[in-house]
Length: 65
Image 1 (cartoon, rainbow, N blue to C red):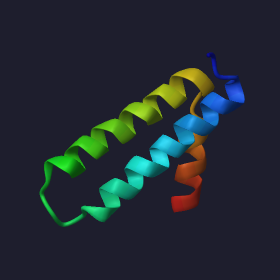
Image 2: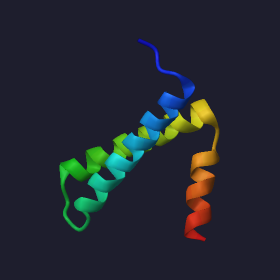
Image 3: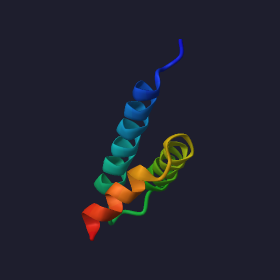
């Protein structure tokens, strides 16, 4: 089964949020879980950039400025 463009974008967004929360839940603790979550979050962010451009990261940067 293939996903539509919209479904793919939602999936990537959900995974970025999921692993972002996992990273935040382990802040202050050196753990392999946090390190793995950071790498997975970055991977999903990179996939989103490749497929849909840099819009997601620009939105994120705009919220922090």
